[in-house]
Amino acid sequence: MITLKQLRYFWHLSQTQHFGQAAEAAAISQPALSMQIRDMETTLGLTLVERSSKTCALTPEGKVVARRAAEILSQIKDLEDYAQQAQNAYGGAIHLGIIPSLAPYMLPSILPAIADELPDLELRLRETMTDTLVEELKNSELDAVILALPIDDPELEQRPLFIDRFLLATQNAPDLDERRRIKPIALDFDRMLLLEEGHCLRAQTLDFCGNWSPKFGDGLGATSLATIMQMVANGYGVTILPEICIPAEVNDERVALLRFEEPQPSRQVGLIWRKSSPRAALFEQLQRIIRSKYDEKILDEN
Image 1: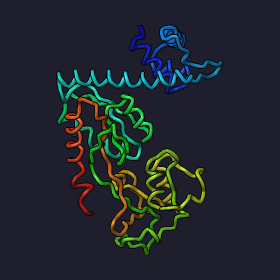
Image 2 (image 1 turned 90 degrees about the vertical axis):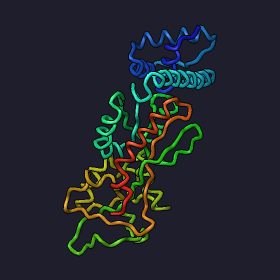
Image 3 (image 1 turned 135 degrees about the vertical axis):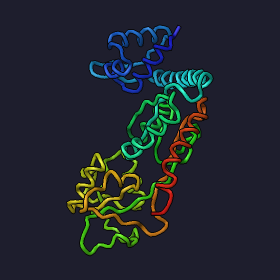
């Protein structure tokens, strides 16, 4: 009979396509993981993995088994969540994911508030890109995620948290009036600085800029807003900056911020969880706590 342990090991292998990385993710030795996968293949009478000296790939049968294993593991996670919810709806551990363009600016504010209102809750945080967060959420590795909406997936529940408006960050100049509103058509797109591929903020900026393509290609992509803001301060270009980032990223008199004309470009930040999760009451409580931190600060006009 196949064991849950084998299903988890095989799921890790299906994600990494590498025995060593799967063993590290599963916190066991590589020989032990390999033996468990072979036992699973023997039980099923199927070859699940094409093995080579350096890597591995799933067979067609292995891909089907991996998909079904993910479904089974997700159902088990929901069962465990139900048991936790029945014991203490607002306690226990949850894995919360958040995107990099929000994490350093939101977490210092929301974590103390969550700890105050939900003292029995243990938050385990994961910061990475949107696509990875959504995949891990659907695979039950994460319980909920904070990112920019919308996410087009009928399996996921989406709740708004706040509107995060975009501003233009540019090098300051003596004759620059920061009170004036600017038109998107007036932007010098050839001087636009972007985060590297994979960051949702990059995609949001490109979407706002329409059909424009970066003049310098993908090679100029930065890994952090802090890097981009230093480039802006030194006159190497301009960037689109989310309002939530301003207190942390704009502490340099060489940088000026300009608001856009109405309707101002923005992103809707939201909290997402699986519709099948029995911990919806907890996530709705988290939504309320987070919204209370940002309703006045972000939603009101400056």
